[in-house]
Length: 210
Image (cartoon, rainbow, N blue to C red; front, side, top):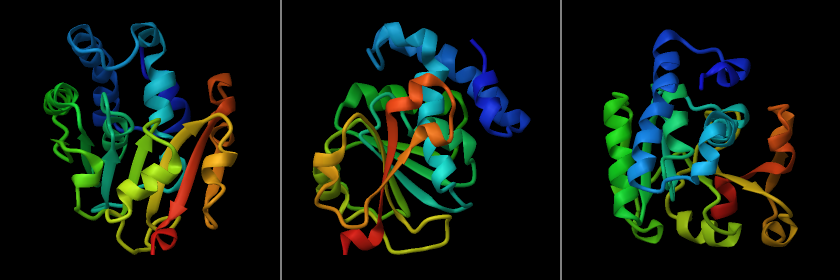
């Protein structure tokens, strides 16, 4: 298990290589105690979880000082991989399940990710504001918009304006129908592996929330 797949698409410095390399053994150890991801997914960890989590980097990137909320982080995705890739941005990872947040906090501490904080809280009860909200396989888009409506602040200093970036798959026509400014970007545009053929980024700019 190595990080060759990540290096195929991203230029990494030594610290990032070390942290991405350490992520799998740490995660595998925690996954024995807490079911963070399916055990059958562990052999595909860097493809299905780490690289998948990095897709928002291809859409927007995160500038130094950017604030990013990972809503419903679960086992730390996409927040932890993005935090490794963007060490000068700030990532706040939230989830309603305490044992998952404790695992995520421990992994972040062991990786010495000083740009990560984690909190057990329901999305609708979290009211801080951020440049971007990112999320992976948490809920249908209308529900995500309700939950994050107060969390995205106006701004346009990245490749795309501040907003919501959701990692999703399958037919999205029904859940995206009510949004005028929605963009659906195939992840296969960025990554060539067959796993990504049905995966998409759903992006809503902050103006959709006004």
